[in-house]
Image 1 (cartoon, rainbow, N blue to C red):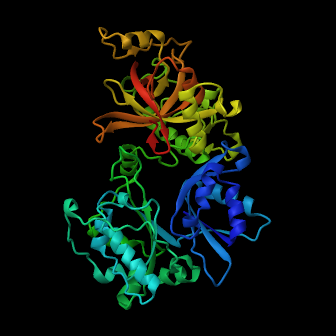
Image 2 (spheres, one colour):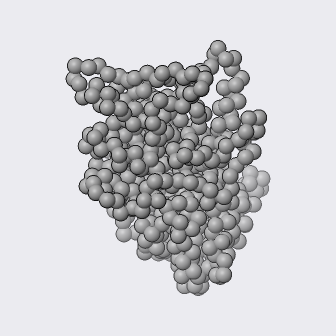
Image 3 (cartoon, rainbow, N blue to C red):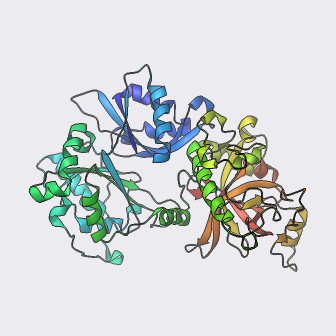
Length: 525
């Protein structure tokens, strides 16, 4: 969804500063972003005074290019639908008392995501029928678009680059011709780093969007072949990590409302493959990218997602007969269907009584979240302090309630799955692993009695996603562990990795694995 903030530039900057962490604020206020040449992605907070607590959602900021006709500026905030209402209320709260209008776009825009090294090839095959505009700005946009599509992959282009284009109706040239080019002999991409998008696209104008909504229908196209020009925006999507290679990069294609099917058909016939949420999640996992709301456990949207998934998985589990399902009580698994990060700090959010539908009991107060996730500059400081040692500069009240996102790599066999336990190793585990003559592949959990069903080892975190990675050729997972546990585990550290023991919910075996801190989108080195 898209939230639009409209008002004086200084007022908008002040409002953004109250919901964005200080280390990321300079990116939102940078010259390229303010000019409308680049977008920027950051985390929206309820109130920066409570930072790093109170995370709401991951959002993308896009400024409308400046206009000489007015001093008013428009700022688009692109947010996941699960957090739209909460983000809108927070932005409204911080815009009160100022001349800023806030609005949620309903059916006014459609956003497509193209991922993979062939994204440029598909755009070039689609051609988008660039209009031959006489203005210098239009000619410059056309030249930049040709330079962009000549690159073999979007990963070769500047991150979050915004292109404002005006194209003809894609249905006039449907279906697009398949003139596949060889990526091995593609010409070198022309540099576009100096490109400044001062072209104000018509897609920013509400009147233009309203007019185009009716012309995008099939009935309008049949009755009037002379379709009006269509303003669109292309936003470069950077690659996620070194593991992701080029297939994690791509484009966000923003088109006016009512034009989704026209562009969808052309993209599919040009060679794009439609995927669902399951395939999209798998791509994020292979790239090592953050996926909202799953990888943001300190947000309400993540709590709602896990609550709904918990109800679905529990219902599926209870439909099986007892002899055909794992006995989680004997396996000492108290939460097999979801990750209970709040239990790592002594309490649990979202508890429900037996017989109550957990899907109907969802928290709505951000202040009730009792933990946070270290990100950006705080995470950099934490990683540096782990290497150097000594007293931490991060306040104790934050470290005691902080989670760290980590990558998990099994030492030997096994594929970690969602909701698997991450535990600290015992002295015996470290001794066996350091013994070259000992073949140690894990330790079994003692089956519980009726009086004790908690894990025998201390749980320091949970795995949020796991799979057999085709990119890495082995099992791989990402998860979150407490910051204090990493500070305490100094003896079992190997270079930039820590030795831990992981256990899947339906398996009694603790298997050794290595975890490393994720700094942004790549591992700390």
